[in-house]
Amino acid sequence: MPDATAPKPSFAPIKTQRTFEAVCEQIRAQLAAGTLKTGDKLPAERELAVEFQVSRSALREALRTLEMAGIIRNAKGVKGGSFIQAAEPDKIVQAMRDYVHLGKVTLDELTEARLATMDIIIRLACERATEADLAELEAIAERTKQESGVEARYECAAQWYKVLARATKNRIYGIFVNSLSSILHEFVQGPDYETLQETLIDSRLRLIRAMRKRDAEAAAQEMRKHLERIHRHVRKNMKARGASAA
Image 1 (spheres, rainbow, N blue to C red):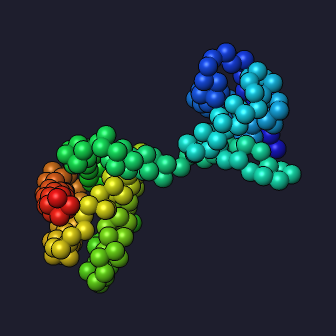
Image 2 (cartoon, rainbow, N blue to C red):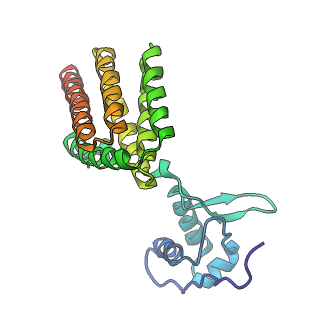
């Protein structure tokens, strides 16, 4: 049941040329203030349009924009309406992927960010990982050996990084890792990918041994060598694609 004593969002009339953007800004501001929370239902369209003093078409455009951004979900039916959506990390992953495809982020920038981010992650994981985390990392590395397909091995790698990020006990790093892994996926595969995978499996096992010893420096160095091998492979693939296209 809704809390009758909780503060209710209060919206101001809109007076701007791009009214739908102003509507979006006010709703985002209410989220930032904590007046709107996950699961809250926005007032009906007619009521919102009156409160904002905007047209129904401008309001609908704002609601569509917020839905595409993953902030609200629009449900139909008797109990339908616009509801504040729970955070969806996949939206962040897609936004970062779009930035790369649009040329707004280069592979070198991506490489630099990944090296720096993973250095922090591995050091925190060395300090905070539980025995269950380490056992799961070992199990994934061993399972990777049994997989023969390229895609299956990639899925193991993605899961391995996810568990590693989770071991930091900081959910933000999980979002970073998922984003970077997703973007690099399409650039990693190439003629020598399977040979690269064999080297990486051994690297993961060495890294886990360093983590068990809580040796953050050794683990960070192993991770850096591991990532540098991957990025050399990615650059080689991208050059080959460029030559082929030319």
